Length: 196
Image (cartoon, rainbow, N blue to C red; front, side, top):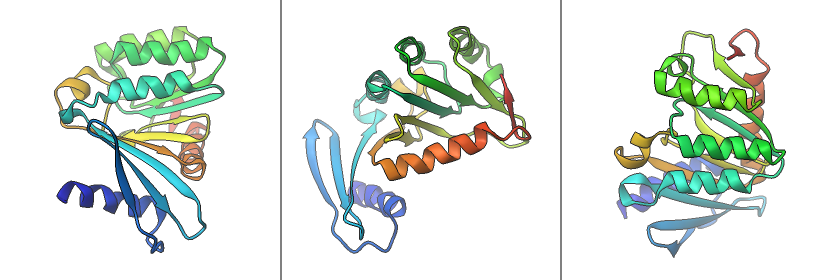
């Protein structure tokens, strides 16, 4: 019950507190649940969540999402050192997907992340980093303007295999638009972000 409450409360924040319709959760595979929410406007959201400490492999889920992209892939990620995720991002670009990536200035100086960012840059994918005093601490990917992947999960080996992390996939174009708008706002802000 505690786990369900911990999931429902953030979901309420995502869909708005004005909804009085019930939430339903059903098991779709081992350790993965789908929550369908009905808002006042009668739209439905498909939310899947994963926990690295339960062996649900957020990296595999993310790679599958990246591989499903057809048009656009916007990634705002604090830490990116996992090579197979980087390879999936590059393969998306090779398939003709319009890929943009933003990362944190300090993390981009980490020797492991530098190697991966150089691979991405050499594949012709534009990268921006923050120039403001705070961190770019976001961890989200928007696929084709209709799916958002977010949570505490950084795209690293440690986040996949050692840390206690959560990874949430939201299949809702309205939510995706909010994230894409945020991404584009940062991307176009030349006073707080610069090309890597």
